[in-house]
Length: 264
Image (cartoon, rainbow, N blue to C red; front, side, top):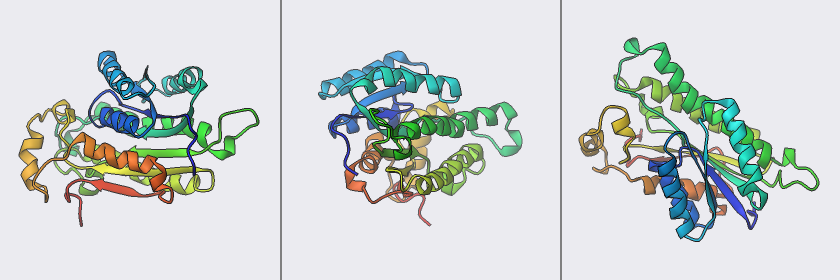
């Protein structure tokens, strides 16, 4: 499917880590970028400025993806702003959280609600809005909707490994994202929208510190078959490829960006 000349990609959780790297890699490949963030407006604005320095348009847009109404409002803001002159042609569902290492029998209901609200429900909410704008099923005369596009879901190698003794809830949430990717790819296959995913492994970002293990990358890197951690940009390169016309016959695919950790 040929992409429109003026296209933009929305990246949830785009103010840091893999999301920020996706914004910059996509900008280098000709995308305008909408950077979603939850709290850190300054970090999001820094990413916007970096994208603009690459010669592309960019905006920051605040929304907690676990809030259905906030996600709907975010897309409406983009329709009235960046979307006035550009077509939404890409969505990267990157927003996600981990928690401190814990066994399942120690996890609280509050923790589980948060884990699935952001990692799973947030992906559904954003995707639903994107599909309403991308799918040929929603095309209408005089509207920019229905021109197709690509969705990339950021899962995790944990979905295959399981996260025993640490993050079974996170692994289960990402397993749900894998299943969502496969099912949605089939659902939209004849509607001009491709749906794929990436499963990062041990990637050197601050998400590990947010889970109470700032030394996790250094500690686990020697256990990876490639004997090192990956970078956010390496993950972003896979995401950008799946968004691009180079992946035009790929839908329902998952790319492991894990240095071999999730093999077998």
